[in-house]
Length: 283
Length: 283
Image 1 (tube, helix red, strand yellow):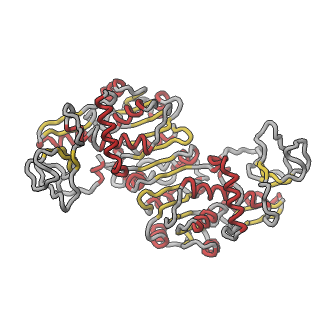
Image 2 (cartoon, rainbow over the protein chains, first blue to last red):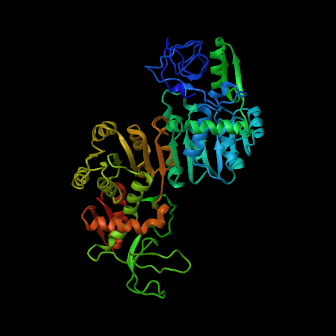
């Protein structure tokens, strides 16, 4: 989703992450058959220059054979690592605390709530359909609500998190966040991860007032982050995610669209909230 | 200044901190002659109930005889400690970094810049008069400007902090802060200390847009704080401030008004920016 903030114009290859297998190679580091993840955008095939550009990431050597490789784009990739490092490094969620995440049925949000549960936190999520909310409850979220149908976000948060929010994992931004901050506890932490509510604005800073009073009064800490901040710790993060998935502690869902020609449809569907879990296009 | 955010109504004693000497006592902990700081508000004399209410703070036992006691309300009191803990604990300012502080000629701001210099940082400040700016330069600020007379805050920051800002100590809030955030470096830290630009607003959150894009894009950390957060470390903080003052490394100024009847005038003067350094009323 963050790719949206990059400037795209007609004639430029659409950005996006791809999991692929090496079909031909002149590099001994990437023999034929190697599974990689690259960011060369929307392509059926890509020619990667591993000498002059950042080399693609390889699948972990111990990647379980019974897991779909597409998880390298989801729970064992950037969305999963964003949840993992965001919750544990950035928010430093502690046992007994209340964690709130929005876009909770997405590739990242759904994992935020599950890791929160593993760590002994109370997990609260919001999403945009009743089907998503039902899935969140299946995943073990302590409370979840459909933000489109509640009487007000204020009332929904009061009910779902009656003791206030200690950690807020924010994928949405804008007015939504300004409201959530009023429900934070003293010394609460906020991870500013995405701002999907602002992506279509010409000036993303224009939506939502600066919640100065809440930040100062409740002594909140707001941290903007991109997951590459912990690049050196990705191997440990991936190993932990793979282990939790094998143990059944982390569940995932993929919204799979078939065919390259359907990529625009899949992309727009993701933006308007049609998918549950990670949006994947199978080529 | 923070007292403004408390709700005051007619007939309630105006809030404010007072340095006083015990004239009569029934408490062996506070014998006659003890110098204390209390928060019983605007009074010429106060009767303190040390058993049922928070006891007043005593002056440090080793408080230097040649320093005015009024510094217990300034450089060796809450304003000084706010600068000390805000800069070192909250912003974690490191050698070589650029520190920007607004309301820099105030009781707190002037000390922020001086501690920044002691720690090997570049200190940049803004204030509301040329006399204040001149004083900041005397104090050793690397750059300072009068925000009321510069062509724009953007241009002034670009000139004063050409390499960007790493640590921002914010006493002002509102639009001012939204602009400053655009000048922050990657991983910059912001201490949300006061919001004087918003104190007269009915809804203080309404001024200034939520600078979401800057926070996320630059991976900033914003921390709201009140100095009592480090109450257990105040003795070390005071000891360090007293030492720096004795060594001449921290200079201070007081804006002294004489007479209880002039308190309203002094208070309003402080709010409209007439004072340089700590506003003191001598009774």
